Image (cartoon, rainbow, N blue to C red; front, side, top):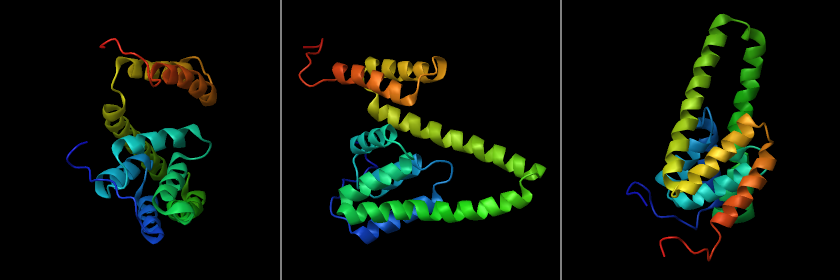
Amino acid sequence: MSNDVAKPVRSVSAATVFREFLTIGATSFGGAVPYLRQSLVVRRGWLEETEFVELLSISQSLPGLNATNMAILVGQRLAGRLGAALAIIGMCLPGALIMLLVGIVYRAHGDHAITTAALKGVSAAAVGLILATVVQLGKKSLVEYADYAFVAVTVLMVNTFHQSVLTTLVAVGLFSILWHRPGKTSKAE
């Protein structure tokens, strides 16, 4: 564990969970995963890095948005059912209100050149945020050469062979489970 990551806390009030996810929901422009990691692992210390990656994996495997799935999982882990409910409300409320306002403004001014230019700049920044998170998570999650192979096969299946995410998760997931299964003898032994 890196020095800038606090120890996980297990007893958190539902109100505190709500406030934190409300803040994340209001400030996580361009994708919430980098903000979730920074807030939950680094700043608050509510999750360890490995827990975050595991919960993110579950969130990505389920239907729906990663951020809302994470809010439910983390909220439940920290403050039970009430924490899960308040976490998802906190996560979604700011975005819903902002999207309502943006939709109203976009309908009135969406065809202007300045609007198109602004959207292109925002999309580039969002890709940069996602890439930064991938690099940070990859440093912690990809420990064997086989892990990199699983990533490459996943990318190939989805982008080159146009397989569905579900098919890819099942196929690569099964091979990964077999590879990392408990009790497997390693070549180093």
